[in-house]
Length: 111
Length: 113
Image (cartoon, rainbow over the protein chains, first blue to last red):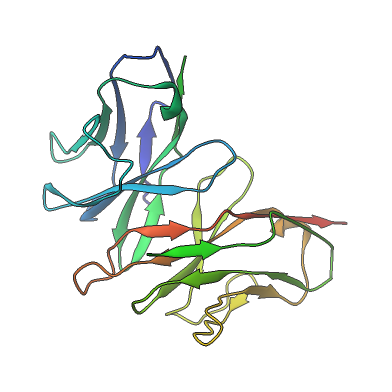
């Protein structure tokens, strides 16, 4: 069964550095999402993406965040200048038939 | 605003006992409710959704709009049911069902032998 994949599984970065988290959606899925989960807290919606543009974003998704689908396969989340509070698990999800399929997540640690 | 509340962070039962994981929601629109499960070291996966009204792995959940609840139930818990369970509310996006999910805090279910 096809699955959403994410790379890397764990990323350690220094405060102020840029990071790019990558997701390969299930092919023929058209809606993509990023969520994050800070340790001990709930899974939070960041952004949804459809037809090569953002369809909805949360208040967490400020100017430091961006998403794109540069090559028609990868779906990326970029954080321009990481802060300590960006440390979290980041999940990519794709949607078909009203079911969101989640990737395994990328654990981002900002030091 | 959308909100999902799972009042129990931890729930422990013995094998064979009934289990109920509570979920309440707040949403002004027409809700779509889901239960996701995350087994140890695995990804989040859909357990069931209220639209399909089906039973998965013996679990059922009924949407009660009057009480704004979507509790997850299983009459006889098994050890392999031990996992983190998340209730989620799906928002409609322009009349579609492709909107964001709002998650509850999650409930860790432990089924003892």
